[in-house]
Image 1 (tube, each protein chain N blue to C red):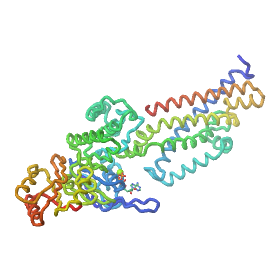
Image 2 (image 1 turned 30 degrees about the vertical axis):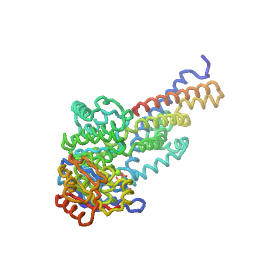
Image 3 (image 1 turned 180 degrees about the vertical axis):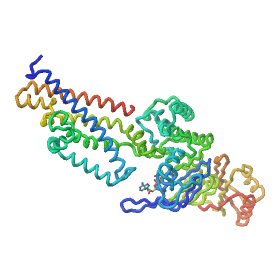
Image 4 (image 1 turned 45 degrees about the vertical axis):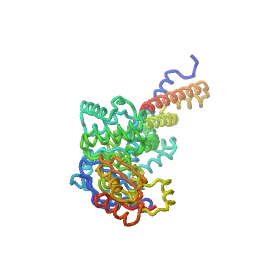
Length: 340
Length: 219
Ligand SMILES: Nc1ncnc2c1ncn2[C@@H]1O[C@H](COP(=O)(O)OP(=O)(O)OP(=O)(O)O)[C@@H](O)[C@H]1O
Ligand SMILES: [Mg+2]
């Protein structure tokens, strides 16, 4: 388990004080894929770099499996770092070395003998599907291939934690997809805890179990991806999630609604997981006289379950509308009123 | 063959002296400069072993020596030369000022080469739990190698120029041959010949440097 305990970080640049992190506390359970999302400058990288003490807190401390890593001597810290792999947005491979030599470096640092290095690298190259690039130089590889080398290098010493700083931000969507798939595989096959920081919400949606949303050095929202995505509380979170899970009435329909002379209310209904609830509208229509009209609907896969969002116009008097919303509530379905 | 006015054996001796001075001082100078430039990189204000005192001492020392013209430096440190090699004159005596001249020069060139190394590489190294020595040895020097080789090439050529002046303390060499025989005795063919030899030297060194630098860069 990785535990951030009341971490603050202050940078002073030219007498100017920057509060990069403000009282951040967070727990990352072993074996999880934990995503941190936020806009540029939110403090994500600073937070991530606390885990291997590339950055040290001004206040607070980081615990890994109960050990306060900010209290370690340099040589003890180096041992901890050897158990933490890290991959970077810009890959940070050595251009003067081949793929093989790049992956060999952490093994050489661990004084592993040549034959064993050879065996491990062959296995790693197979795992990241780059066996044919063994003797290529980074300059001869695509971005996705470079990141695969980065992942192989990070995994070479069998770490128990993998840190990913914007690991897919320099890649196109398709390559991003394949790298995320690979990270998922890393997590499942080796049970490695993965901490990802990103500004791409789809990264969180695709592979994370838990998410924390950061804004100006603070964690403003955190929880399981399912919880946060289905019920985002902060404005910022909603803005992020909306880009992958739209929940807005299309503009054309909004305009039509403005000219609708009838009395109506609009509600947004969310279904999580249980598909059987999707037929709620059928029952509403059967049992109540008010007219319902679907303005928007989307169904998204999330964490191996389904998140459905319906925006429905209910045309009828207040009493009739209340009966319907009470009915929906009585089925433990979340809904909220939408105003144009 | 054309008559150059001096025996061929003397020309060959001069060439040997030049090569001797260049290579010995280059070897010692390069080793020193690697240590100094790495120290500068590590201890500079943004470095991973930030140390104001060490940085300032090396930086100032390099600047001071670099601002003294070689011919003056050579004469100025004669007492030191005497202490180190037991004599003030001759080819071996010239090694002392040559090393003191070339080491700070190479330090500056190497420092630039090393600072060009992507900071991300150093970060990756730290994340792997590398010690400071390992960071330098396995990451920074290999990454800077191509650029370092070009710096050595530039330094070597500068060194050849300096050896010509070493004649002033009786070190001999090709440059001295050109000055004493070619210039003072108005032996134009010899002068012309030594110029050609020096041009060929420099060309060969530059080509070798370019070749190995490209190779070290891995493409
Ligand atoms: N070494 C440093 N020295 C001074 N200020 C820093 C340093 N590192 C980060 N900062 C500042 O701390 C704040 C948070 O930076 P950080 O890199 O953690 O943001 P981020 O969320 O990772 O942003 P991005 O998405 O752009 O990578 C920024 O205001 C940044 O300027
Ligand atoms: Mg960042």
